[in-house]
Amino acid sequence: MSKTKRDSFTGSIGFVLAAAGSAVGLGNIWRFPYLAAKDNGGLFILCYIILAVSFGFALLTTEVAIGRKTKQSPLTAYGKINKKFNWLGKIATLVPVLILPYYCAIGGWVCKYFAVFITGNGLDAASDGYFTGYISQTAEPIIWMFVFLAVTAVVIICGVSKGIEKLSSILMPVLLLLVVGISIYSLTLSHTDADGVTRTGLDGLKVYLIPNFEGITLKTLFITIMDAMGQLFFSISVAMGIMVTYGSYVNDDTKLMKSINQIEIFDTAIALLAGLMIIPAVYVFMGTEGMSAGPGLMFISLPKVFAQMGSFGRIIGILFFLMVVFAAITSSISIMEAIVSSIVDKFGLSRVKSSVIVVIYTIVMGAVVCLGYNKLYFEYSLPNGSTAQILDILDYLSNSVLMPFVALVTCVLVGWVTKPKTVIDEVTKNGESFSRKWLYVFMIKVIAPVFLFVLLLQAIGIV
Image 1 (cartoon, rainbow, N blue to C red):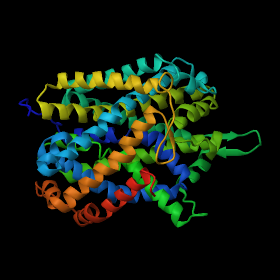
Image 2 (cartoon, rainbow, N blue to C red):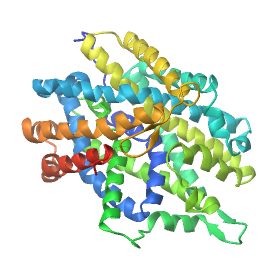
Image 3 (cartoon, helix red, strand yellow):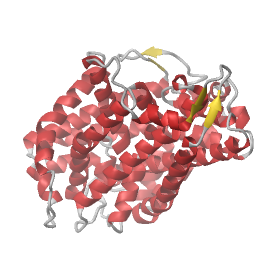
Image 4 (spheres, one colour):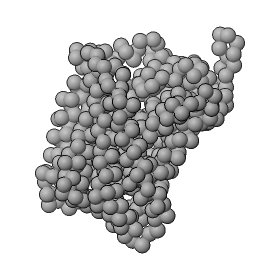
């Protein structure tokens, strides 16, 4: 155990902004809009919001409460709750260990595109094959990955209050302004295609918000619910040790329930705004066909959209990728912090030494991820039916398999072993009310475990 005095957030606002910064990442920007477009627009949004205030709320509350109660990072926190579940901390810590290298690789892609647009070469990024040509290079993606990792590491070395909290308090308000501004501009767009069909941003807004129940079956509704639940893992940063870590830095006199509600609202608003920012713009210039999953949306479809906006497209492209850089950095620092904090708590090393170890590991594994698109390229069929490279395999193991598993076992631990009272007592320790206590108990004991088990079966190709 480290003898060093544990750093903490200076107040509830710092905690909320840091936690929201962790939640607002690439998953919100490139995955939420795609799923909303795929899963009948408003129907997906409705499912997402319902799950966010029930399922997501239960998991978020549990992890933050475990962190504050134990004052430990995930590697050691679960063992403090119950010694028999010490192994769960190891698996929970493995999740950010798997995520950090490929997240930094993608962060490098974002930095590259920001540099391309700010130097006036946005039209190059819109050309066919540009993205594939870039990631197929050997050296440049590794260099940009290192740049992104270096920024992340500097913030982590500066500590919780002087690094994470300070950066989040600056970046998050700016990020929110950028998202709102681009969203408003997206709604003003209009374009007439070669066939004489005119589409407007408001038409795209209708596609995004109005539920489409045509052809809905129980199967498609089930898929929509599972997609919305899977997205929540990306959005609220649960089951990857982050919220346990951040919870451990929260002061005992902080009103926990109030902070958790604010994180929920902030994250859901940003997720909805990400869709509002992207779907109308892509719909105007490319129709619903332009909505692709993952990197294809951000690095292929959107540069083409910016190119069709004329001279103003360069400015929007710069602002958009600046916003994405901010979102990626606030998320990567939370991922790295979960690992660094675990090393500090478990082995008693200093923050600097722990950070250096993580940086060396990430450089090596991040380079392997980058080389996975050229020197180390191969194709592998995953159990869920998709074809994967190194990055996809790491993403599948962490997000689709380990995260639902960690969340499921956490529900068993809190819901049935130590009982929900463990979390409820922590949340209400300052005499606070817990208005959704009944919902929390029902979710953590019954509904969440069932949903998570089904999500896990879906990930491994059984459902």
